[in-house]
Image 1 (cartoon, rainbow, N blue to C red):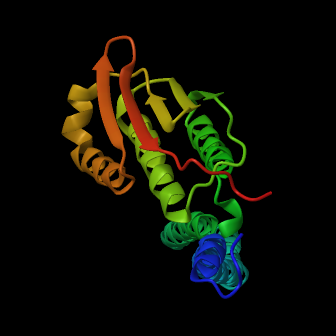
Image 2: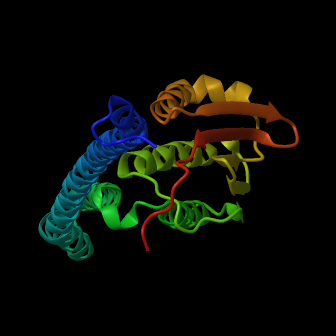
Length: 266
């Protein structure tokens, strides 16, 4: 046995105590390090959340401002242009002189065109319509109305799930203007009585517009700038546009653009 005063006694005691002390120090150090690391990670997460919250608030503010401007344009400009159109119609119906009738008709037609163009801009600006579902509904309504007025039969087909897929105002407007250009070309140049509009939603949005008319060769001669404008808009959309022509389809325009992989909040 070792006595307390014996050096060997203290050596034995220290041989038991020191590992415990070292272990305790190591454990404390690791705990402090892990706590500091966890706090740092928590601070980073909180900073990211604050940044995302700020960006979301800014986005909502922008969307609210877009909607406000759209509403004001609808109330102020829309009402004024509609009044001009109705006044022109009334003038057209009540003046006998043909020269004034022609002028009133021009005023009425210009007012009608401005009303539609303004409604198109309002639709694009209103963040409440930032979905693919809204794009399809708006495009279908326009194409059907415009072509049926020209005695052209329209078939609209939708493949895929269209719910809760976001689409910005700028994207919606560029897509719609391509559809509008193709529709006007069909009326002016295709010499066809049928038109097909197909929307397909997968990893991308694919839109096919087929006029079943005379084909592309003659159309290119008349509508070169229209093709160029459609190609420019497709580039803005980071998409691809193809022009296919043969005897069975006349001219088929195929627009493909990528879609965001996220859903809008319900």
